[in-house]
Amino acid sequence: MQTVKMVVTGPFSAGKTQFIQSVSEIDVVATERKISSEEERTVKSATTVAMDFGRITVDEDLVLYLFGTPGQKRFDFMWEILSEGMLGFIVMVDSTRPETFREARSILETFRAYAPTPFVVAANKQDKEDAWELEDMGHALRLDKATKLLPCVATDRDSVKTVLLELLYSIMSEMEGK
Amino acid sequence: MALRGNLRDFTITQLLNLINLASKTGTLVIDGASEQAFVSFREGKLSYARIGKEDGSLASVLYKSNKINANQYKAIIERSGKMTDKELGLLLINAGYVSREDILLNLQTYFVDQIRRLFTWVEGVFSFEAEMFPPEDRINVRLDLENIIIEGSRQLRELEQLKDEIPSLEMALKFTERPLTNVNLSVDEWKVVKFVDPKNTMSQIAKTNKLSEVEVRRIVYGLLQAGLVELVRPANAPLPQAAKPLAPHEVEEKKNLVNKLIGRIRSL
Image (cartoon, rainbow over all chains, first blue to last red; front, side, top):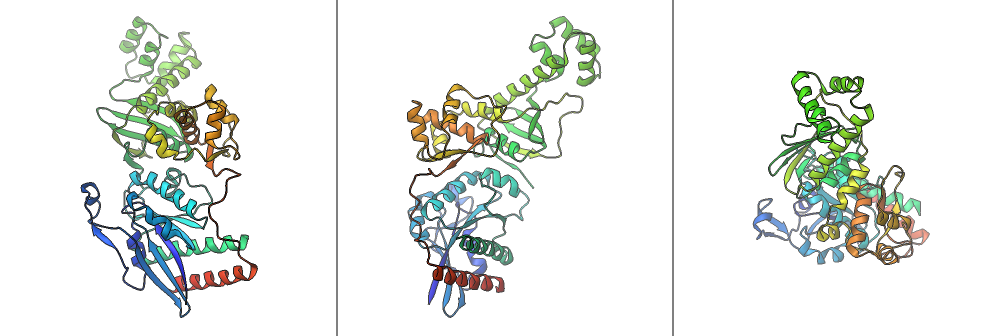
């Protein structure tokens, strides 16, 4: 049995757990804990402290695992472990919370340093009225033109599928370029 | 969709940079701690700015810059009635009081001064209103934002924030595709620009120019925000631990694997 891994990362409350839940064939093995910080509690009540874990079986010989990283900086020691051997990664960003863009950029740079694998950026919550436009987010996140910045709604399976497919297309084109 | 947020998370220079790069047209409305600011742009260029209750009329701008005296200012206020600034400007030019260049230059200086004041704002909420334009009776200018952004960045003294933006000085710089023309750089900025090359790390540039960490960070931050340079991994730096190159048969195997994944995700 061969297993491959993709990592879903991003700031606190960007929608990583929801993203994995939307496509995983098993209930996501989540290591969520109640939030102790008052400030963070205003955003959501529980958060991932080690990792989320979802699975998509391709055939009897191949399984794709989706790992979600904890968002808070204090758990960043987990990131390097999770990024080892990944096929590619997705950076989730909450389009309605510009205060997290700087952190998203920093997480993106950190993961790029861990492994030079293909990645895409998913602009989550694009269905919300106060979501930033993709072009504005691209500038704010200082993404270059070659980086895929994709609209996403993590609760919508088709939207999540599109993001995963775009990452796979990037992985494929990188291989064809070699 | 919304372009709104808080100045605590998104600084004025970052906002101007975004507006500049996206060539936006509209008005940035900022609700500060005690005043409200309106800054208008056309295709990414500054066209108008007003803060709080400042009048910002052509007559008051010319009076404050000593282009007209107190009596002339008083007379204009009394007699101009509902005359627009454009009409007043023409009248003053025809009467030989000021030239067209005087008017434009003084308005530009006034608007830039307003932006300078904004750079000191750290509290407040902003929104960009694409449908809002400057008052029709006012004269608009057309000013590139790069120099304003660089100047604003010069005022950014907080090392913590600079470190947040540029965590490591072991990265190098390279020029973006934006041409380095019509940009007014200080002597220190030129010293850094001279060494912009993927082979040189920022710490090497700082050492060569005898600049402190804060100084080089501040200069690089300004150049980054103005979209003139970008951070790159130094050309001679070892790559992060990359997977060893795949043999041809391994590439084919990996392609098959990715194709299987694509097929499976599509079928979900």
